[in-house]
Image (cartoon, rainbow, N blue to C red; front, side, top):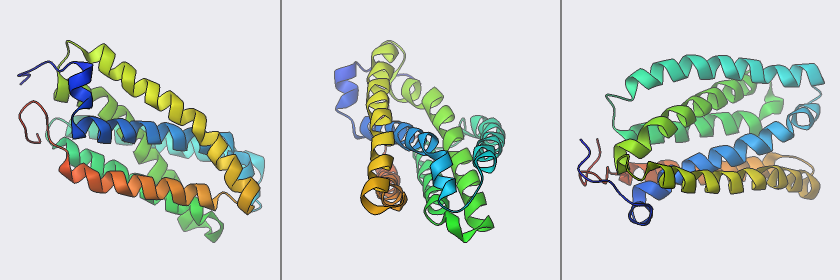
Length: 200
């Protein structure tokens, strides 16, 4: 139940807002950095351009199937568990990305992790803000989150390009993203629904 409609300032004062918003922003950062450099990433392990692009097709298939399942599941599960699952998905995808030269296992970890990560991006974005903060000021709250996401999305390609320039590979950018996602996944266990002072 919606017991209170939070304004933007009130929402920003809650721990849940920042964990959820940073999860969304990090997905924007990682996705843009990864997508902008996908051909170069796969060229480093000797994979042709066409094969590099095909990874998006497999990732989309995983994302669509996962979105359908998670959308139904989200009505019955605590939001912090979905956030934690998002962190785990990111870690799987990033480990596949970092160790892509290993071969098949890393490739499918990248596909599966990224697909699940993108599915959870859609589900959490559609559910969490109204559930936690009510609908009256939803536009202002989501607008703030989108501003953070746009800012992070601009950083992503720069981070990945600097990783390649300074170290000769994209591994450093992958490790940075992994550490941030791991921190957010740990923080997710302390997320509580501001409506009731506890999780739902």
